[in-house]
Amino acid sequence: MGKDWSSANFMFSTYEIEDVKTTVYFAKMYEAILIEHRAEESNKRRKESERRSRSGSNAHTVTG
Image 1 (cartoon, one colour):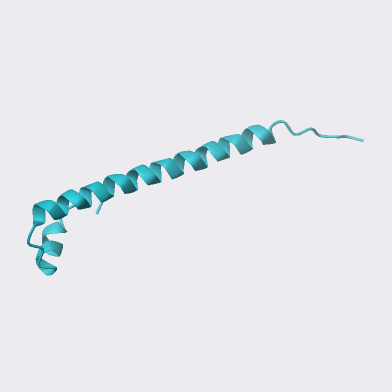
Image 2: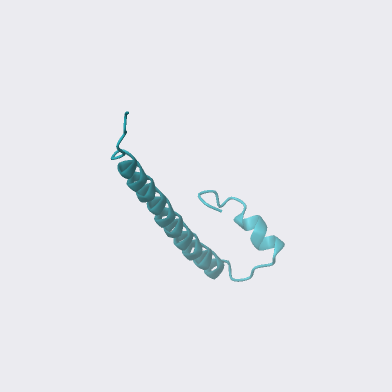
């Protein structure tokens, strides 16, 4: 759900969730894990891009 949890009450009533507090707790835990994973993947792609750009700048040009 991200930052917008306004639809949570609708989902809880639709699926007849009885223990809302515990459900929100686990949803927030899952959200935190997901955000951490996405940040790690983003950092991995950024470092790979930086590595490629550094290795590309060392290319030699041969003129004949």
